[in-house]
Length: 399
Picture 1 (tube, one colour):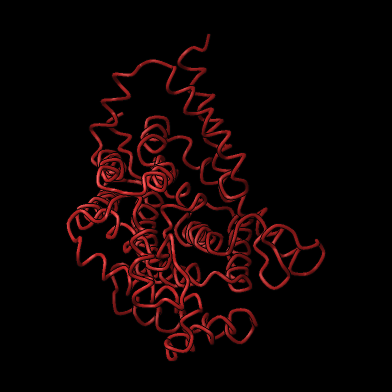
Picture 2: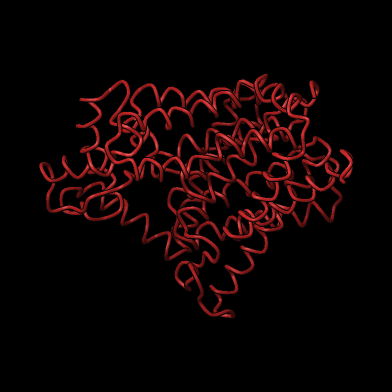
């Protein structure tokens, strides 16, 4: 029988392993998640766990967001699709609160290091495919070398890893000369990797993250921050544009999509604009509570047949705000935004600069990138969001 001490050691090993597997494998991460949840559910001490959860406004906001999806089944017509959405959202009901009760302050650096180690492996694999040392496999092609997940998920996750490493380079005065040099090289190699892969949302997030980091570096000198941003960000952008064929192509195509929207409405950006326009027609008729958790595909099919019958139907508008508004109305949107509100608010409570700054930056990154896809439904990005939220916003002084 496990003692509490031994069980906590098991939890910490599993959490560190989860941080490592999180960017690499869906199956492996899910196995660890099941083990953690099963141990937690049968380990007793329920009163202290319950008190810890209900005393966190962020945990309550997360659980409420999930519960609204369950309540939204009442007025949905497509119950099967509604249950599919519920299945994708369960992290917010169970996994986040469970992890929140398990994480320990003294292991945070190991969680982060394990995550960065996995990103390093992913990045090396990406370069090996890009240089044609390894054959193409899974999602990785020579043109777009994202080996373990699609570029839609890879680049946003890479952006967060870049931010963490750059933050260490800029602020961690305890780094040895070797570690400073290694982290600097790691950051540069990840930035290059960002622009030889094709995730435009992640690339936008990278520039957002970089602007935030510069403001954090020169937090007392806003004018200096703006000057540095106006030099560094355009410099990186134009360097990437000149040196990366894929980035140049994606930027040019994005401009073409925007300028010639009517002629390029079958492109990824054109379809997203059409999804949003059609969805808005439904949202206006159901502004407060939406059409129900499972009715997006059905309702979109109806409006698409009227407004744009030549364009494909959708089960997802590739925009988290539009999806939540259509499913659960303003009630659902306010619930979702409350999660980010509490994250930003709680980020200022930490005495550790890394935790405080990452805790502030991560929700801003998600708030921007959710304009381009439903990132709280995707396995890799939603798991990253939940895992980091479990320790970034925990008040360890009260536990």
